[in-house]
Image (cartoon, rainbow, N blue to C red):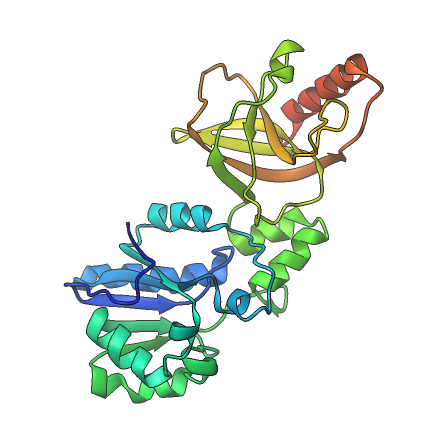
Length: 305
C-alpha cells in the first residue's frame, strides 16, 4: 500500500475507486465501504482511502484525538486488506477552506482520476462540510465518475458507529465491541524490552507500549490471542500500571503467550483482547503476585474450552 501524506498536491496515473472518511475503528460499517472499492479492482481500478490527518473533528476541536485505531494501526489494517493507496490529507486552515466543488473537480477528478465514489447518505466534505451526497451525484456526468451509495450497517437495532463502539468499550462489553468491529479489540505495536521481572519469576512476557492516543479498555487482566509473524497463539494480557512492581506510572500491555519461547524483541505483534478476567490489583509482595499470575495462566488455559 502506498501512503501519500503531508501533501496537498499529488496526481495518480491510474483510474481509481475512492472512499472518503475518518475510519476510526475500521468497523463492519467501514468494511462494507472498503469491500466495494476493493471489488473495483476487478475492473482495473486502484482502491483509494482518502482521510484527513488529523481528522477534521480533531482539527476543529470537537474531539480529543483519542482513537480506536491509531494511525499506525489503521495503516497496518488497510494494507492487510489490500488497499492500494491511503491518502492522509493534511487538515490545516488552507485545506479546510477548499470548497466542496473544488474538492470534487481538483482532487477526485484531476488528481485521483476517480471513476467510482463509494459513500453513505451522510457524506460530508469541503468547506464547512457543505458538500453532500446530492452534490456528489450532481457531478457524476461532469467528472465522469459513478457514485455508489451504500446503506449503513446496523447491529442490535442501532447503526454501527465509532462513537457507539467507544461507549460500548467503556462499558466493558468486549463481546459487542468485537461484533461491531468484526474482530476482537486489539493493539498493534513493536515488542519492547521491559523490566524482565516476568522472566525472573518464571512468567516471561512480551511488552507493548500503547500509543498516547489509543483508547484503552478498563485496566486489568484479559484473555487474549497474540499474532507474531502470521502465527496466532493463545495468551493472557495485563493492561495497566503493574502497581505491585512498577514505579514509573507507565501504562503497558504485558502479554504471557502459552507455549512460546522465542526472542521477538523489535518485532510487530497483534494482541487481541477476547474477554475480561479480573481488575488490576496491587499485591502484598512478589510471592502473592506470582500466585495470582499462576492462577490467571491456569484459568487462561481453560478459557474457550
